[in-house]
Image (cartoon, rainbow, N blue to C red):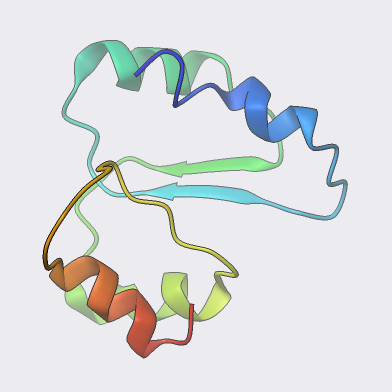
Length: 86
């Protein structure tokens, strides 16, 4: 996780008008501590369960969706993002 989830990676892109939103409960303590301690003003962390009624706000605002797995045969979360045109 330390390599893949570095806030510095997003910062290195120097996208001044972009925001990184990390939404969902973070259960892996080392990752949660790192993310919550090293964030910049353009990184928004919603460390909580996101109810179905709020999902549309995140997906409609997104240009890209990133998931914490590298291989999957079928994922309902990926299919949901695709349904929002991401």
